[in-house]
Image (cartoon, rainbow, N blue to C red):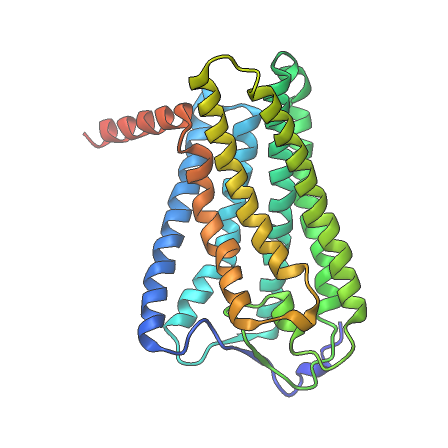
Length: 313
């Protein structure tokens, strides 16, 4: 990779979210709380899914993958952001910036595909319950999850390789709170036609195709739910689907707003707010959205808390 652009400037400067000290302190406290909730909430899902035999099903296997992914995804960016909020000079090395971009994008892409797989799993469970065990085998679930991770890191490699080779002409100030593709490309002083084309194609593969799969799965699920005679059961199923779709719309909507636009439409202040949602807010909300109304998970959490109390006593 060509590193000539960085011989004079080995560090990149991040503008951050705000220059006001009071605002920075408020954001530090808020983001720290979000990060703790993200880490604890997702960790609890992983623990109860692995320790409770009733939760060792395809649904919870994929949910465990999502929780693990969200912990790493959040950890890739939030600790550095917290450090910068308490620092006067917010800098990152080129290698650190490249690594942050690569892992953030890889994990973000993985989440898109994983949400599509989870929607398909729910579609089979709701619409074909008698065939669920035979169709969603352990082998299929393993390879489906592994494929989402592999696709995430492979597609990210292509995008990041092209992004990091743009000519920056000595610019080293990124108007963002972490290293992200669109923000980094704003440093470019060359024609980004190739990058824009690759980004658009990747966005169609990464965002539009999984979103269409999710939409089709949930439309069929809703059609099946309408056939339920019990109004109470139907209402519960509708509220669960609505919660899941809220998580999907929040994540895909913010990612689309960030990436599915020409580079000329890059607006730093707006894009920082958008990034906060899919980097910090969504990983925190996912465990709440997917388990809040889940009786099995709530029961497993109570049993876990009871065992912990017994061990302490």
